[in-house]
Length: 210
Ligand SMILES: Cc1cc2nc3c(=O)[nH]c(=O)nc-3n(C[C@H](O)[C@H](O)[C@H](O)COP(=O)(O)O)c2cc1C
Picture 1: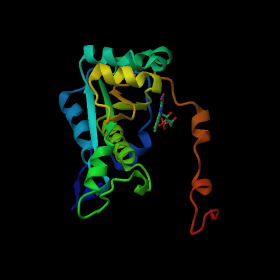
Picture 2: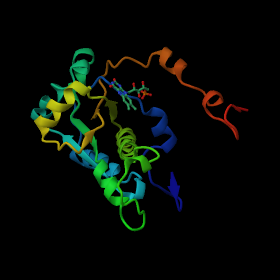
Picture 3: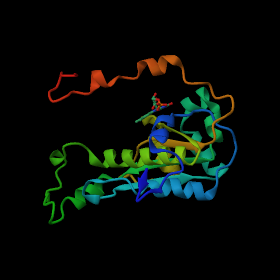
Picture 4: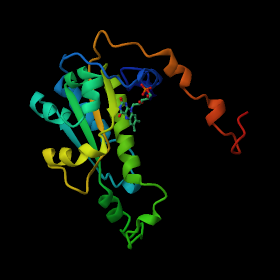
């Protein structure tokens, strides 16, 4: 990516996009506090409807805090235990009320704050966009990351443990760290399942692919 001829990225943007994979196996190699701050800062550059920015990010960087987190993710602990070694866990939180209030302002005019007005729940969309920016920034930093869900039955206890208010919705967790040297390569089956443009891109009319 260039502007006025100056390089902005350490890695070609297309390379960042291509390299990004969900990595579920980590070593315990630390990551620098500066990298952590750059990853978090990039979330704040995400677009948001009405520039509402109805998001929050729980960042867990100490072994103690991360240990408290992993008790709520039994599936990943069981299936991919080295995820717990990742030195950074971020939980993106979506805040619907910020959107309802922002769109009740004069320039938007949805004073009834009715959810039916929303073509899609932009609070989830925007927090998802912020999450993707963090995943991509991790790759740009030479790190690996994974987005994963928190199962519904764990959400209540998780919220209580970390003091998350009821009106903030956790989207999932994001691990960031260095992949373990023995991380299994991506299975061929995964790449074979990637949908091709000719099946998902509709050109000019739905159903037209050529
Ligand atoms: C909204 C969302 C939820 C996901 N939930 C999980 C999850 O709970 N556990 C997991 O291991 N991976 C999860 N993933 C990762 C996907 O499985 C992964 O993105 C997909 O298989 C494609 O692989 P890639 O991202 O490495 O290209 C999730 C991804 C997204 C975007």
